[in-house]
Length: 139
Image (cartoon, rainbow, N blue to C red; front, side, top):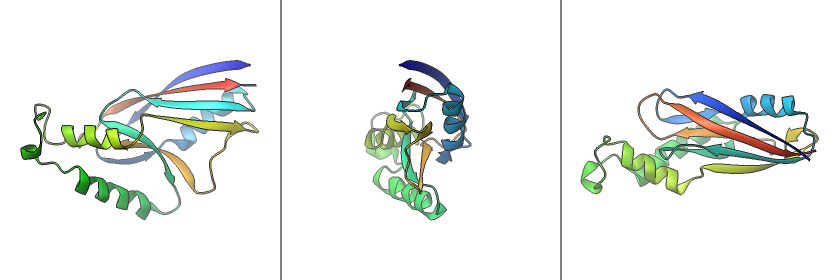
């Protein structure tokens, strides 16, 4: 068994979905691991990770609109408002999604489905640099 770890930094332009599948796949390929398990971990509490459809951009558009409805930017709803009206809704969105993913590795590739991609889901309005820790172990 071998292990490898890498820090991927993703720059966002504000709220939305950012496909990081290709960057992760490129790093994974460089490890030489053929079978194992990949952990993808986001070091932030106002963004999250999702495995979602990557074929039709309407899917991520509709997801963003849905999350705006269930976690609106309305300071009258929250006590934690010191970091701006988008901060507490960002924490709620992150609590409802994931900060880490586990993905099997088969034949040197992530065992994602045909229409699946890995997305960084940015919940804040302003640009951020987000750290994603990648860890793979296998053979």
